Length: 113
DNA sequence: GCATTGACTCTAG
DNA sequence: CCTAGAGCCAATG
Image (cartoon, rainbow, N blue to C red):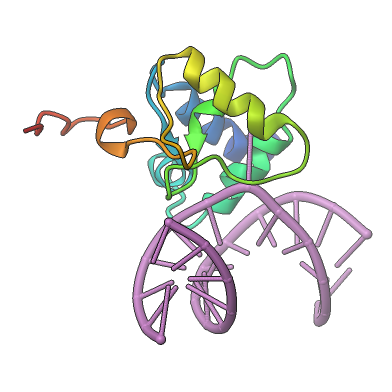
């Protein structure tokens, strides 16, 4: 018993990612902070990288602080954009999305001009 | 146990 | 807008 604390950290990150609603995105740093690890943005990416294919985690809703899909090997980068577009998110010509429209906010999202 | 790496972020130029 | 450097922390070798 007591060896579940090892899996608890990634589980917490995954749980937070799973809370991101469809059609919204979140940043690595944002997920890390909400999960309780304010300086572990990189670890969020590390967890998503090891994520099994059949998981229900919306990993594609996680982008970097620039509002772009993080660069990496494989087609997964392109796949992420396709998945987001499938949820109604639009990218600019530079492959960037609008935080003002798509960034997930836990609460204070009422201020919009 | 140290050195390298990385799906990150911030500041300067 | 883009590049470079530094800071950060866990995973990996």
